[in-house]
Length: 294
Image (cartoon, rainbow, N blue to C red; front, side):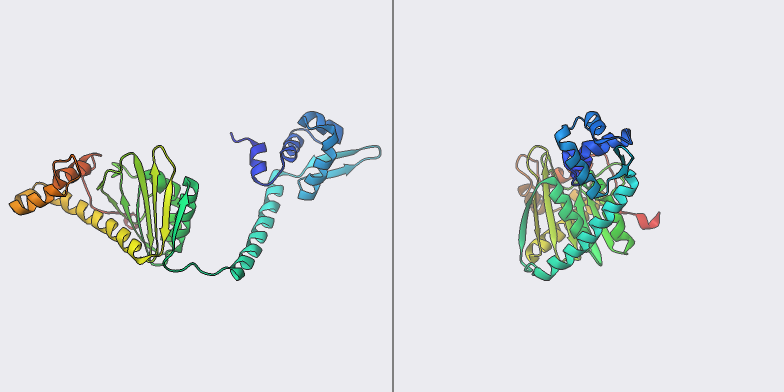
């Protein structure tokens, strides 16, 4: 279970304020002296803490004939009020900042660090799609962004998803036309690629041990390269799976030599390498799945 004190601090409470409110939820009504004892907050600080909680709308003062006691505002009431204030502040801040900002140039290239930032920028890119969305990803990121994919799909955005892990079973995160083809070995790293409307691109690398790095851009070259990587990967997977052994039988000696030459270092050639990748997860089909048919 998450620590309420830590969660309240994430919502802007000071540590003493969070401890006092938590204690009040468990013991009330109490005097300031009693609250200091139950919350283990120094008596010299308790009344300032209570004053701040009153200003936040988190506690109510109950005046008696001889003493003052405090009771907590119900958590749902407090959080609803905080949400309303936050939404109002965000709306006002958005208008003020938009009035100051200038749009980024079309050729910009942003470099972003950290996994949370990768997902945050990924969500922004996903929700910017108005017509179509091309995605290449692994199950971890598919699940993390599942709600965002579902929301844009509800707006009739056409989604094409390349599952780079070639999951044997649906993870529940992928949407739209789903192609499950493992077409590259990223060597202990996952990739996330998002291309909305063929206008911008996000490419992120998530190493197993290391810092997550992300590039986001509207530069046409990067957009085209990423879009065609996804399209070509899907097409290669479909053709190789469908044709199977027929591929090699149809190749000329010259074509075989060329494919052998472009294979990754240490491999027996491009064609054996691709076959091994496509077969490595035990998934045997590349026919796209579509949630529209469900």
